[in-house]
Amino acid sequence: MKAMIISSIRFTSSGNKHQRKNILNRSKKIVLLLLATFTLSCCNKDDNPFSGNDQLPPETQTGANTAGCLVGGQVFLPHQRGLNAALLCNYEFIDGKFYFNLVINDNRETIGKTVSVRTGEISLATNTIYPLNISNTIFQPDFIGGGGIYGIGASNYFYTNSIKTGELKITRLDLSNSIISGTFWFDAVNAAGETVEIRSGRFDMHY
Image (cartoon, rainbow, N blue to C red; front, side, top):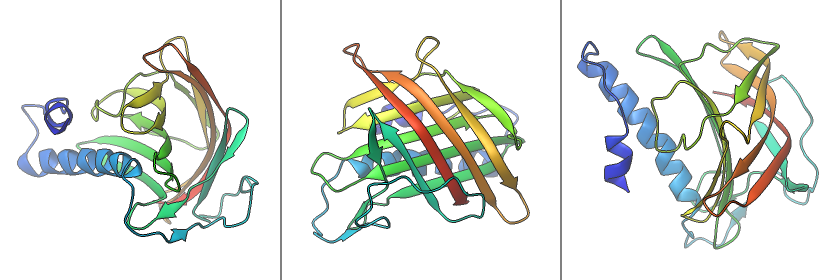
């Protein structure tokens, strides 16, 4: 799998060593966090930022570091277990282009679950809607457009595509304070043709 991940990263001939290193480090960080979702931690402590709640966090724009959505009509919230992180959000400027990545992990069970929204080579803007219609962005760290992912375990991934699509809306982008907030929804399909509906997604993050 590592060979697949590394081989999917495209380097331009004009990029310098520092730019190539940044892109590689960003890609590794994203993939490693997704893979960590599916690893059972030896620690039994559940460090859940929404302990006892079955409700989605409000749609705020203050940098509250909250996120959640509905997966098949059920509330999906970040849950940390041991060293496995619950939330990741990046909006980075690399090699002259912007990359956005949001990962929400539920690490409570033996088989972890994750919801992710990504955009590549897009400069995001407040009150703008972006289509989520790119497939398999986990192993395409350098891509153009937006995509949504739902994962169960290490091999059952649901992806958006040109038919199963969604939308990302940015409600606040504060570059000075490194705050990004927004909403999202998408439909996704796995290799077996099964579909999943992700609805009422929201995030309010420092990045």
